[in-house]
Length: 305
Image 1 (spheres, rainbow, N blue to C red):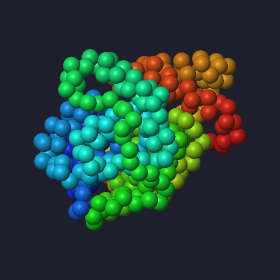
Image 2: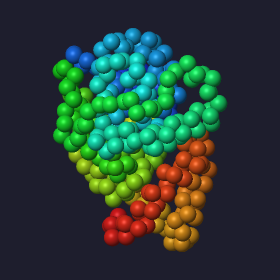
Image 3: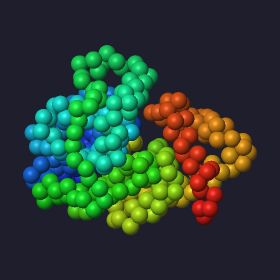
């Protein structure tokens, strides 16, 4: 197995596909009885997904299930479209995700952030024919730690991994040693790993240690594709190291600035200077960094790194 980062749509291995774009993707896992969509991506990749389903001859009639790994707008964008396209689609998510996705106020916020991404890319006309808006019409089932979703001859094990968000899940397929952590284990951006302990950095680090116990041949991220081979096997270990370095940097920045606001501003500026083509605009990056920095400064003074 080659050791590499793959960011183009195509077959990952037998029974598993990566679809979408470099910055946002989903996975389709095929079993003997049915197939499942894993994660929901950004809404503007719908035309890409439809084209790739045809290009790779993926049988849409076998897609009976969809697993939401967490409820952030950039991981659920396809869900309304596919629940309307596949009328009997069974949707699975954590109970915390369903609290978000059935709340009218939070749904409005999700739609607003999705529109911001589309406007930034100037592709409104390309999406005019697709019904992408979240409304209070998506329902499904709760899944939690230890649950198994069986597809016939292949199954996903559900792992609770809060820290990036309170609602975050990961999934693992033992038969192919594929881990789907969503944003619970860092993003394989360019040649580095971006830490993603947005909501609770303490839990994020704890869950990195939890995920390190799994044998992984395919690290299947939601942003910037998947990692295979030896790098996949050591990805969590490297993510722990980089996440601890980031923690130390945030503390050092706060010591210099004396302010959470100024620390967030510095982090956004630093991130944008290094990563001008990163998919999130500065205003959303600031929303990402603020709770992360707040938790690190207020709740982690006793954590040893």
